Amino acid sequence: MREITKMGEQAAATAIPQPVGETRPAAVRVRKPKSWLEERLGLDGLMNSYGRKAFPVHTTFFLGEMSLFSFVILVITGIYLGLLYIPSNVEIAINDQKLPQAYASVQFIESLPVANIFRNVHHWAAHLMLASVILHSLRILFFGTYRKPRELNWVIGVVLFALTLGAAFLGYSLPYDSFSVTATGVGYGIARSVPYVGGIVADLTFGGTYPTLGSLPRLYTLHIFVIPLLLAGGIAAHMAILVKQKHTQPGYSKRLAEPGKVLGVPLAPYQAILAIQLLLLMFASLFLLSAFIPVHPLAAYGPPGAGSGGDVKPDWYLLWVYGFLKMLPSFEFHVLGGTFNQEFVGGLVFPGAIFGLYTFAPWLDKTNKRVLNRYYEYLEPPRQGPVRMAVGVAVLAFIGVTFLAAYKEQLNLSVAALWLLAVIVPAVIGAGTYFWAKSGARNRPYFDPTGEAAHEVVPASEAVPGTAVQDDPEYALSD
Image (cartoon, rainbow, N blue to C red; front, side, top):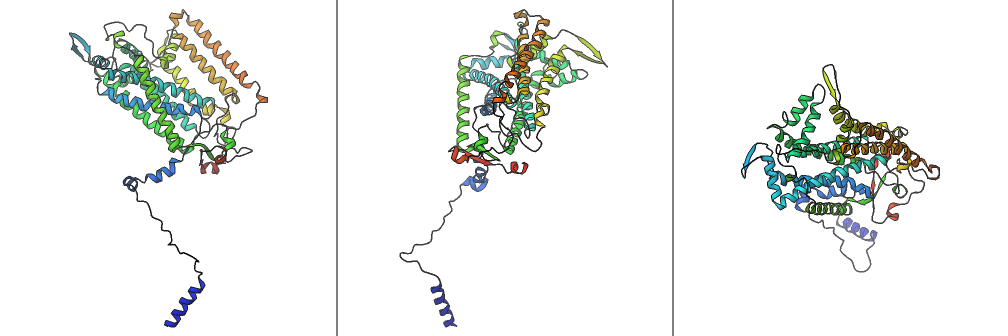
């Protein structure tokens, strides 16, 4: 038995060639110990899954991030202001003068330099958020990226736009000065004008007959809690769908990226660095703007009752509704017990029609029905969609006329003249836009915005150093 074992060992020794020269010990792979957070949260896996997500490079794509960062700034400054503000219109005595508590608390905020600049930043951040949301949505509209498969995310974006307008309007009521009470009272009148249920809607929103003791607490709760919570949920859903469907891409990406892949810079670290730079730039710009341009000083209007609100005009983002109300003659008629008047038509039907047109744009656009099994993954040149571009510009021109109507008395314009402008200006501008978009169409190469492969595909890693290409397995299944 020992001989057999010995013979086996000799055979093994002759069968396996031995290395010549100096022998080195086999390399041993030593695992790096995991950090405390990694053991509990598995952050490396999260980074591997999402850290390399590609973000296409296009200047207009930052408009969405500006909207998000404006909301973040509004929340931060709003928390600070909420520590100093008192949502009550109960009168208290200050320096032998009776003032509503809300008015007095804003007066106190104005007396503190740091608090006052935070109030100004909060004001300008609201303007910036609305401007960013509008430009972001117009970019999506004119480039045609609201079409399949992004119809649902477009609808969510329109809802976020409406919620942002609602939050801005509710912010009017909080200073509770003469301007604030007058402007909010217009909103209360519009709410009451809803046929059949106007009284219930107004009481639920404004806490009773405005202004009453329940008005400010109700409006304050809607402004700082209900609508921001809805906005946060909507933004989260908007971003989740974006991650799931992948980002739309500029036209140049189609020549560089392979089918079913996204060309751009990775989330970590490049896109994150760009986002942080944008956030800091916005913060700095808003603070500089707030330091030199004060907003809505209380002394200019005084407490409610002490003076008239004057010819109160809302800020630019609600001026179009106010202007359209100026274009309507006074009327009232009754149908089955319900009252219909100009406040209801101008204050609710008109903006509802505009937002309805915006919401259903993916279904009104006939180009979204031509191709059933292909997705729109790239920005389409605006001139390639002349009807979409003409209609969009015509609607913007009509809204521009309503801005003029808001200054009807100052410009000495009659209602008939305004309606003549409202018909002629959009028609002329829309037609001009259509023919401009169509001009030279035969000489321009057609760009296919759907997710079809380009004739010549250049490997992205070779064409654009430093970019990332993200796989999209679901696209391959859909084509």
